Amino acid sequence: MHPGTFAERTPDKPAVVMADGRTLTYAELERDSNRLAHLLRAAGLRRGDHIAFCVENRPEFLVVAWAAQRAGLFYTPCSTRLKPDELAYIVADCGAKALVASAATVALATHADAPSLVLRLLVDGEADGWTRMQEALAGRPQTPIADQSEGASMLYSSGTTGRPKGVKPPLPPQGYPQESKWSGLNQLFGVSEETVLLSPAPLYHAAPLGFAMSMHRSGGTAVIASRFDPEEYLALIERQRVTFTLVVPTMFVRMLKLPAEVRERYDVSSLQVALHGAAPCPVEVKQQMIDWWGPVLHEYYSGTEGIGFVHCTSQEWLAHKGTVGRSLLGPIHILGEDGEELPPGEPGTIYFEDAEFEYHHDPEQTRGARDPHGRQWSTMGDVGYLDADGYLYLTDRKAYTINSGGVNVYPQEAENVLVTHPKVADVAVFGIPHEEMGEQVHAVVQPAPGVEPSGALADELIAFCRERLAHLKCPRSIDFRAELPRHDTGKLYKRLLKDEYWKGRSLVG
Image 1 (tube, rainbow, N blue to C red):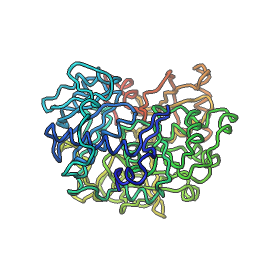
Image 2 (spheres, rainbow, N blue to C red):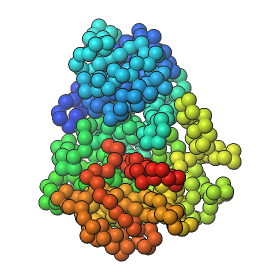
Image 3 (cartoon, helix red, strand yellow):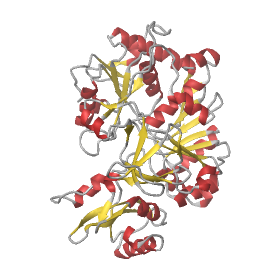
Image 4 (cartoon, rainbow, N blue to C red):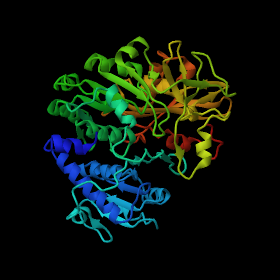
């Protein structure tokens, strides 16, 4: 299936609904993505070429994505929060021949002056050196291009250390449409023409973009918010009768910290699937969400690289609390430092079988993600363990493991405890230098609104953690910040904090 199927069947049905009320029907999505595909062909772009776009959440975002998808192109949606030199690097590195921006991002995108570019399009507004997309589409055929072929997204890592890396998958076989991994996921989650998806995260990330486009392969509607506001999110579920939503654990935390009377104000009974991933979810937080929403929570663990896919229903999680689920794509291997497989219960580096990807222009990083012993296994660098039933539990990123006096401490455990404290809005735990122990467990806390940071609060939080975890796993010191460097996907940029404490020292991890 593809949007054209539903443009014929239900032309006036909304394919996209923005939280502010803007809509894009299936007929409009089909018309404009066809026109843009014709424009890209006229500009010389052929199957396997590349297009980049830096556009905020808006209906045109998905027009651009579908034009590239049906023209057999690699397409790279770029974060609107990048710095000019970061965006310029990505556009040049991927060899984009076309770049799309908006009035909100054109000042940023103008700095991307890659020699490969032959076309610059602006979805709204005006700027020197840019062509208005609607004007360029006028008069273009509304019918599909003659050589339709499936393309593929090529996303870049967040780049918190060094330059971001492009994750390049193989292009699907020639022809359009082709079966994709999203077809299997649609079946797994029961996606149909009746599905109403709510995604409050930026579309330039893998899951929000992939699931929004998967709605269009199934005839559903994608409801897109420009940002996450906990109360407005609940109001959208009620107003749009949302059946399927994508969230990250920090969103759960923010909703749970709303006053009870606010949470109870909104009807969320339409929800059938609430899918969360991107970061581990504290056990207490997930239990509270299941108590509130019912057994509609589904968890997944995967990555931009397409390495593995682990899934867990609410029922499975309640029987194996803390798990992220079992693999749906072949065996999981937990390896020790010597490369040997570890028994159930012992944490090690998580490897999956047979992932087809490469880091664009970076064979060394690609090799680094592979099993050094030559097996066709790949890793995202996470640490975890399997239980006797084959359920996977995440321990932490390997890079954030704290070695304190020869003992490995996984900071995620303390983070999961501290974030549940009513006076904590956000928290990061990591190792800082210690002359005797090598590293000391330290926390940086963002206090909840109205809470003043103090030494007494730090003592209270340390005591709170020690009541629930072994003392060696708990921070011995706490600093406070007005806000932590967290990406809008929910990913915590812990490295940026850790670097401050290791200036002039040999950085561990």
